Image 1 (tube, rainbow, N blue to C red):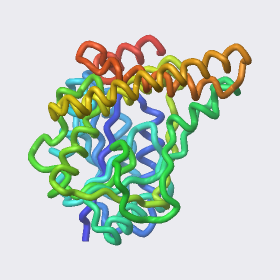
Image 2: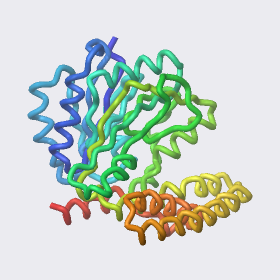
Image 3: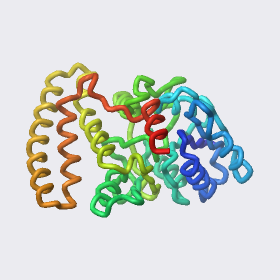
Image 4: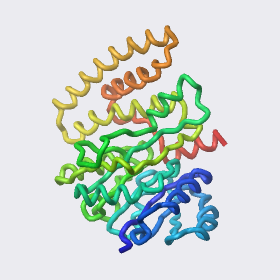
Length: 312
């Protein structure tokens, strides 16, 4: 029963895209489950078309190319959904490589838990990073969870996930395109899933590796992301007009920024490799304070194209 579509959004990462797609070709124990692999090319120039055409020759399942020329992370994910009609949707990013049992582990965990969305662990990779910074970067781009499959209370990010389309991805465009440039489209989606009584699960053996591109494997980039992650709780409370919760998160943020900032300063003076971790914690605290519109960093869409152009 072919009931799973794997969606891979991509933006000018030909080597990463090929690595990600070929890792799907090598999936084990799912020969009769994969309905299609959908590559969504979010580059206005359609630069991934040739790569997909070449890979199609080796594909064990239908390999679908969908051009989504308006850059934006939510727009790309919605375009992938429009090109797939399977009841189960798996998402893999173009900087990720799936282990051979990735998809089967996600499917088995979903069947075992009955969760609407299932997540798996990620091993972060930051080749070429400075030795003192590499452990922090690999933790930042990684993801850890329980040692065994089961239900979990809080969701993770969309990359390395399996979703029941009917309950987790309702409608034609479930990802909010207002998040196209700042990200957080998955946070909003999962908040809606939770509000509907949906459940989240964990697949302990669904491993992927995530290779941070050079322009992202920097302290500047990760601290901007940490700041945006810190904004999340305050923004969620504000969206629900829960102003006491907003104030509470801002107070927490102020305390975190103060305490972690002092520790970060001391570790910087001592040139400790651990200082990056406390820069990160400080940034998350500041994000809880400055959650308002106008302060959101932009990571995707046109801004990501500009970064790629500069690093080319």
